[in-house]
Image (cartoon, rainbow, N blue to C red; front, side):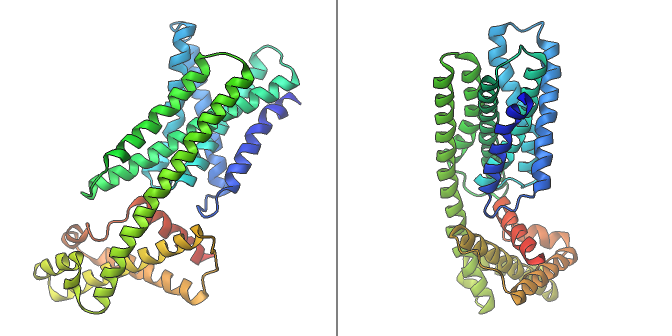
Length: 345
């Protein structure tokens, strides 16, 4: 019964946070894999701490252990962020909570098996507290990694990077281990400690959610306006009306006519798919999750197939030349993947 009590808070947390996923399309399989990754991280930490226990004092452990735990839990989250699987706030919360939940499951089992006997109430309370600290900190780390990847992508594309965005990413990556250290170092009334950690975690996640919403709206509002304008100018044969169109015209003489035609078709398909994906994302965000008509599904899938064929046929020089125009940022790719997944159902 004690084992069930220790695992119950984690199961509830994961269930609740998964139900928050209105449009991220995170599969149950991936969620369970992340829980297993968290359990694997707990095993690695347990082995490391067995080796370092002889060298670290109890006071030093209160600082070193939380930082190491967050670093090791962050490895699968970093892999997901680099593979552009964490690009929105809700993705970071769900993935981070799953890894942290898996970690806390094994840690609770270790305490039950290797520690002193505990009462049923203590097991429940400890399971809740451990789940909170690990799942909350991992969610904050995942959000920080998400912001960091966005900034790296912007730098690669030679776009402006705001100082406040850099500071936000750094703050989140420092705040999570700092909170974990505070939890392990300052021991006072358990209820007061739980309320403090819960409030700090909740405040950080709400603030991150609002900040992420601001970044998403910047991505949607500015990016969508420019793309719609360029798409209109291509369809009307008036490329010179936009800065991007002027850039495409400036490289026209670089390619044979048939290649430049393919370039324009490729750019047009890229923008059309990006606009469709962003529009679908905006509808879902507004609560208008209406089914996509079958003819539209076929159109999007056909466009994507043609887009892939053109990408394969274009030469390396052409791809390098138009790379700034057809750049898919993590949020663009995620929204397009969601659109295509919906169309294939």
